Length: 126
Ligand SMILES: [Cu+2]
Image (cartoon, rainbow, N blue to C red; front, side, top):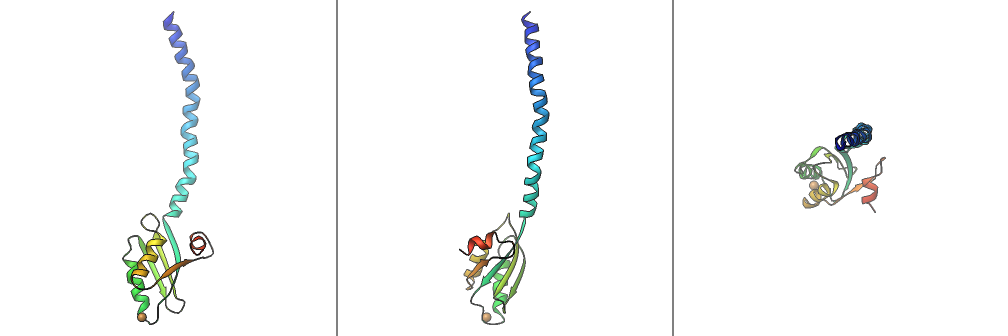
């Protein structure tokens, strides 16, 4: 008799847990999918830096080499005329603050400027 009670309790438990254990992983997948997508987008970022102190044709090269030393930086485009550095970097390895620190250390203070996407640039210029 105790054994059948234990069995029916077990069956009851399975009937309760069963559907849940199915829903669980599916729910987790559903909430993971957008997370994975945003991670993929967050991997690479492009920031525009307003660079001050660039006075001659060799200055952009100095800014560029300073930025190149920052781990995670993938692409740099520095314009003397626009006083602008466009930097593409791995968001997981570095951030905008590390980029502006690098240019500052080289003698060229910079700050992120807002682009079409707003975001980081908008927040940092405040
Ligand atoms: Cu110069």
